[in-house]
Image (cartoon, rainbow, N blue to C red; front, side):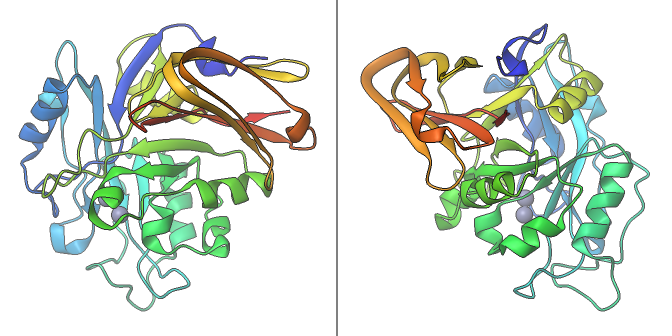
Length: 306
Ligand SMILES: [Zn+2]
Ligand SMILES: [Zn+2]
C-alpha cells in the first residue's frame, strides 16, 4: 500500500499555508508577500492574517495576486477562547470563506463569554476550511488542549517562525500522541512568516493535485495527499508486508516512527531509497516517515494507517 500522495494523479505543488501580512502583524503588504513567495519558486500560499478585532477580522483578498503560475487559498489564523495555560488559542484555517462570521475576539487575550477554541475550529471546518492545530510547542499546548480540537485535519509538525524566534518549532510530540489516540491527522510544515525576521522559506507543503487551483489544492490537503519539507523531496512511501520502502532525494537518514517509542532508522551518505524492516513497529497502528539530508533539513510524510 502506497501513501496516496504518491499514487494520486497530477504533480506536486509547493505551498506555504501559514503567512501574515500588514493586514495584521506582518511587515509586508499582501501583494509583496505573494510576489516574494512566487519569486522563491512557490506555486501557492495561503495568507492567514490574525482574525481578531484589532485588525478588523481580516480574510485578506489575494485573488488579484494570482497568475498563470501562482495561486492563493483564502485563509486566516483564528483566535478565540483560552487554552489550559490561560492564553488565547491559535488555529489555522485554510480555505475559509470570506463571509466567515467573526468571533468576539478583540485582541490577543481571551475575553469572557467568547467562543471556545474547539467551537471556532468546528465552525471553520463546517464552513469548508482545512483546520490545523498551529505551533503546539510555541503555544505550550497540553495534550488535553490538542485533543479538544475535534475539527482538526492536521497539526503543524514544524513552524519555521517558531524555530527562528524562540526555538519552539516542534509539533511532532503532540502529533504522535494524537495519532496514538487514534486521531487520523495530517502533518504540515509552515513558515508562519511575518517577514520581521528570517522566518520565511523554511518549511512548506508539497501538495499533489491535477492543477494548481485553490479548490483542487484544498481538496488534496483534506485528503492528506501531500508531504511536508524543509528541503528534501519524498518520491514514494510504500508499506509492504514487513517493510516500508522510501524513495527520496539524496538524504543521510531515513526513519520510520510509530506508536510510543517505536522507530527504526537507516543511515548513509546520500541515499535516494531505503527499505526499513518493521520488526520494531509491529504493534503500531500508524507509521510515518522522516528523512534528513546532510544539511540537517527534514521532510515528513503523512501517517500511514494499517
Ligand atoms: Zn499563531
Ligand atoms: Zn501565525
